[in-house]
Amino acid sequence: MKALREAGFVAYFAGGCVRDELLGTEPEDYDVATNATPEQVKRLFPGAGEVGASFGVMLVHAGPKGGKGVAGGKWRRPVEVATFRSDGEYTDQRRPSSVSFTDAKNDAQRRDFTINAVFLDPLAAPTADSPVRGKVIDYVGGLEDLKAKVIRAVGDADARLSEDHLRALRAARFAARLGFAIEPGTADAVRRHARDLRGVSHERIGGEVRKMLVHPARLAAMRILEELDVADVILGDAGAGPVARRVPATLEIPGGTADLTLAVGLGAWMVHRQADGAWLELRFADEAVERVRKSLLLSNDEEGFLRGVLLNRAAIFSEWSAATVSRRKRLAMTPTFAGALAVVAAERPERSEVVLSDLLTMGVGASEPGPTPIVTGDMLIGLGLKPGPSFKRILDGVYDAQLEGRVSSPEEGMELVRTLGV
Image (spheres, rainbow, N blue to C red):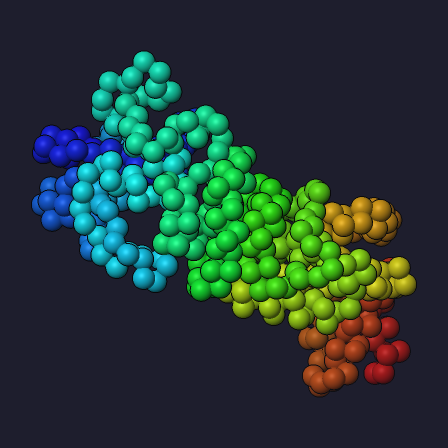
């Protein structure tokens, strides 16, 4: 910022970092907007990378590699420096076909929502009512909307959504994460353009949905997406059923990876959108997962976790009560069982309480690894057995007995092996 200013250019912080500063939260990163052209930025910062020079975006490092940053701290992540611009026509509903470099006022007009179109000059003296260090520059009423906790499109909402249909999902994400309301005119425009999301790449839609469902405000995001009539589109109609616009009232996410968190949130949402009694057959889970996989472009791991959560949920309802102790323990030991139990708890709390009570009685935890088998394949080979179909039958039989407490030592296990066909 100082380097740009000392070289005679205008330079402001822009976008989400300004919004977060004004809300009193720590920005994830900082973007800079300037009247310097990409060529001028390159001359000022010879190491700058071109990440979108045709759109006026350069990537500048805060300090020399391996050294201290200009702020006196350690090496910092690169900073996007974008030239003030006006956008031409959006022919692919994602990027403008052309841009022209302009000033800050016109640059603000091409941004998506007012709360993301406020600039901050951190090197200027603050105004009397400024909530942050520096001077706030607001051409679109973003400050008022921040105070009112409103998501409002800049200018004509239909025009902003026509330029990039993904802005419909971004509106929902910001509203959920910040606890804001979407301004009625903007919300109506989202509903009018809901079907246009079918033309957006599955990768981009999936990216936005991931951000919403792995965030603690996931339930608010689900409700907003339902209210905006975009849920069927983004889920590939996986949730289409007699009961519409249903989301969990509560949902406790078990510890685990982001993939499991996504699977639990997505699975609970999908289940709640169905009529009572659905999803108990395994084929429903398989069919729905396949549709969502295509709609959100799920990775193999994400698909596997979602399938596991839904199949385990179906097993809890369809077979848990009549299952043997070993079968229950085997189900409980799977990586997605805790996630499935969270979905059940959000849907039928009394059912999850029964399962939790059973787990306590058996002395096992949801998704905890089971005991090490006391009989292994090497031990069977030592008896002269050759690997084959009987191997699995014998090993499973001994491990079931171990889980049920009928054998507890290798000697007892090997004795059982002899009764199972050796």
